[in-house]
Image (cartoon, rainbow, N blue to C red; front, top):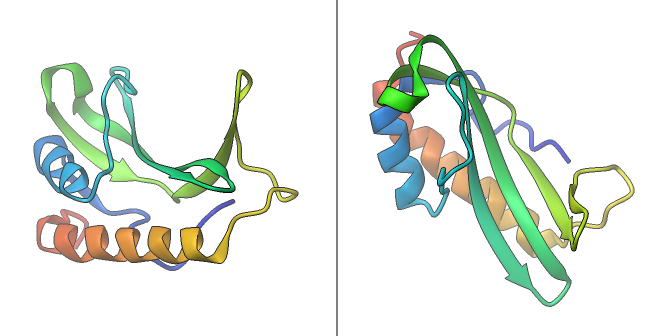
Length: 121
């Protein structure tokens, strides 16, 4: 499920700043990257199951491996994890209201913190 209107989509910023601010809000990049893309995850383990808030990003300038890249953020999603198949984002999934509320709050906080570093001004 895409999460709309949080202000995070299309922010353009330096990867080192992005890593720092995302981690501060429990969005972890870990090994989820290649040379042109990076994904930041926040894991939620609640009684209804395991969910992930995901923020995808890509670069057209630089290399994620060297940490010298300008990243562009894409529309964030929330999905439910099903062992052993992976994360499902579909319309038919149920996402608890409290989960969605926390996801939106997290994304708005990240957006506000990234705004001074947004190169797309």
